[in-house]
Length: 220
Image (cartoon, rainbow, N blue to C red; front, side, top):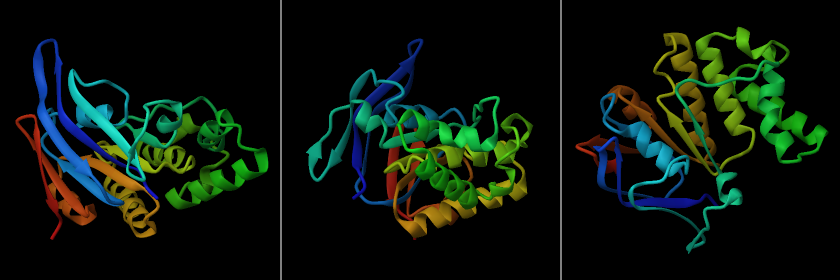
């Protein structure tokens, strides 16, 4: 069963400039949540807080499993993952980049290989598995980042503006990846975008950030 989580009255400022102000939002079902809003409105900050990369100045991000609040330890952090708009890659092959998270988790070689190939097939990079990651296009690199996140089978996947700097072809591929993840229903996906039409194509639930707060509703 997927984790559920919520942001409760969180506030965050940088250099005394408020970004989030008493922001609250609950995520209680699997599916795709899309957070909309213009660049600079705080969407990325919200995702970093939810992914436990940063701490709020005030308020709480709480994760639950079977109704019980979870400790923010390494085990919880391994059940959630964030893909940034600019994916950093290692100077190694596509396969080795995707397998890294499994290696540090001690997954056996044969099992890891199966998981990596499955993830690469899912994002359309199976034929690039032996290619060095630094030679990929920006769109392929973004898909690599998604594969690297998916291979560890997170219960919650955060995607921060995954199509912001990619071409139309890769945008379509990435949107198809999200739609297939929604169909599979194995993870809760939280994605940010400034494109309202994209949000409506992808989301089960749409959220909008304005003035440091979030309003939410079901798509359609």
